[in-house]
Amino acid sequence: MPERRVTVASKVGLHARPAALLAKAAAGQPVKVTIHKDGGRPVEAASVLGLMTLGAMHGDEVVLTADGDGADAALEAIAQLIATDLDEG
Image (cartoon, rainbow, N blue to C red; front, top):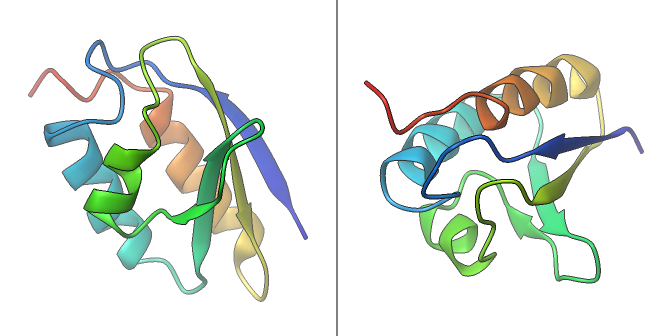
């Protein structure tokens, strides 16, 4: 199963606006994407509530996983969002 490690760039972490933008992008992918912090329970990246329960803060590393056709492209798209400061907009 492909995975990507990425550092959270948003100053507020994956909370509020960044979580909503990320969940919307994940829901639009052709495969289910999960996200977790090391040692944490994976949650669906398409769930705003799930993302907020991660407690992923600015500078934390998260792990994305997906499986199936289009998994690599989906992970890349979501990883790019996480690596961008989504607070500004």
